[in-house]
Image 1 (cartoon, rainbow, N blue to C red):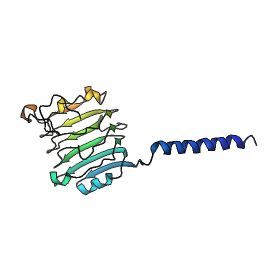
Image 2 (cartoon, one colour; image 1 turned 90 degrees about the vertical axis):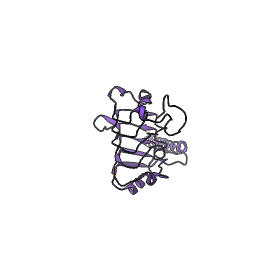
Image 3 (cartoon, helix red, strand yellow; image 1 turned 180 degrees about the vertical axis):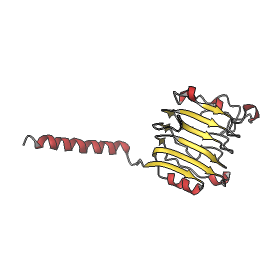
Image 4 (cartoon, one colour; image 1 turned 120 degrees about the vertical axis):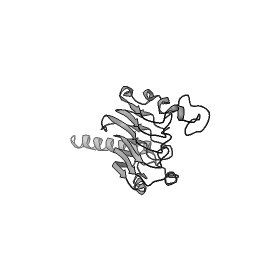
Length: 196
């Protein structure tokens, strides 16, 4: 009888813990998705619709035929975390990540892309990063390079997001003297310091 009592208690504790977790989580479900390589076809972005956490990396790249209007209304508000890295490369027509990923708050960097957890490279129409909910890059540096329309990247205080700021590589973007004297995303007064 003594051997069954610990088992019953253990099973009771596990059941109670499960109910506690479900109660705390409420009705909101967390949908995990694996790594995604989305390229060439904008309709592939729909794979992100139910993702809350990407357990892996997210690569969006090589979309040459897309225009700004293709991205209007396209949003994935459920996505809050990427456990590895986010890479954007040569996605034409994408002007901001603000509407696409309005609630992305954490990039963990458990695996990196050549030491980087956020890579924005050769995005010819990107004007604004716009990741206003991003609060932490836990591991890895940031590489933002050769984005000919991207303004005010140097006004972002990357040290608030990441401890790897010394390894950040932010070059070849639009010179600040060529940028309009308005804050990207909100189009109001001068930008002294922009939130990401």
